[in-house]
Amino acid sequence: MKEFVKYLGVVLVLAGVVILIVHSQTLGASNSYLVAGMCCVTIGTVAHIIINKFVI
Image (cartoon, rainbow, N blue to C red; front, side):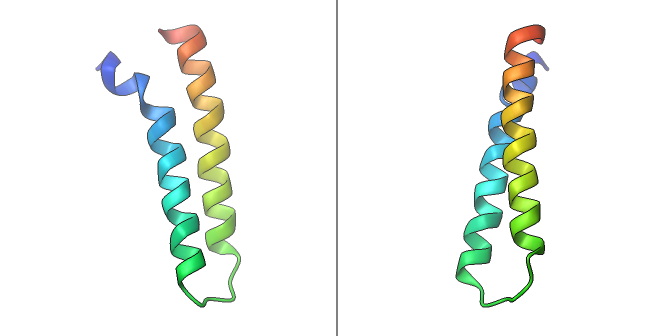
């Protein structure tokens, strides 16, 4: 289980990047993709730092 937790932040960042790519390829005028991508990238970066600093 620790092996999965170790990469949880990176997975969230990659999910955010995929969301941002989807937004750039579609012609939607909504900002919901941008907000969701930004949240995933930000939370993933913070989670990666905290997990690698305190948990592992």
